[in-house]
Amino acid sequence: MANAPADETAERPAAAIVSPLPSMRLRGCTTDSESFRTIDLATEVELPLLPHCGAFAVVRSKHTHEGVDLYAPHGAPVAAVEAGRVVRIVDLTGPKAQSPWWLDTQAVMVASSSWVVCYGEVRARDDLRVGSDVDAGEVIGSGATVLAKDKGRPRAMLHFEMYRAGYEGMPVSWEPPELQRPEPLLDPTAQLLPLFASKGARAAGATPPAPATELAHGRTAHSLDGDAHPARAATDSSRAGVRGGSE
Ligand SMILES: [Zn+2]
Image (tube, rainbow, N blue to C red; front, side, top):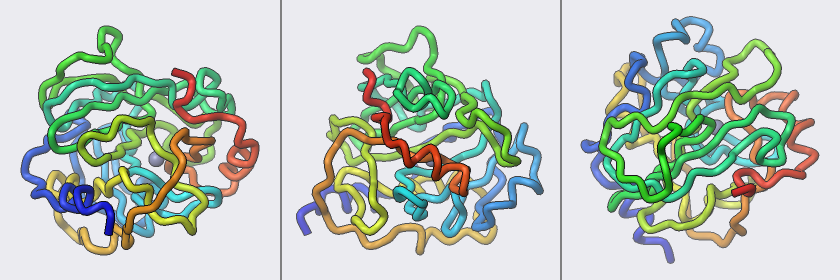
């Protein structure tokens, strides 16, 4: 009830944004966590919908997934989906972020009047700075391998999060799963959906009920991302890291 602005933002028409992965063919939507085996991961990307392990709000062993995982090769250009201003560039995973069980990746947060978009598990463009203005479609970084070990799933992806406009905090942690969605966090699925082919896609069902709730900022040991499987639990359990907290 208290977060009407966030809900209004979440329901904003989705016409404005451009692809965050301009080099990739947007191949539609999938609810199947294994469907990556059936596409060309070097050139094609699918939008995961529940119950896909990379979907927004999928419940994992230690947290609920705060974004959408768009599998993309290491080095794939990542572009701003709309014009805005860079408000954060932070270490998100890996030794620099006190989560050495993953490889070093960063997150770039870009604010506009519509949203704050967090482009996670990337390497920021070298000359990008907090305060930089970026255009829609401007490359702001590149995909970065996050998973240190090959467990048969994609090891690099764009972890894409959205927050309500005006949010100034760090990427949030949504944990444990029984808690409701952190107030500033939005479901990006509906905004990304028009970019992908609509075959079999259903935006509905990707968003759980989302009353406002208080949840501490300062994300801890955010588990990842396409690898919501047993191997992940061991890394989650140490909980030593503050994801993105090393800025
Ligand atoms: Zn993710």
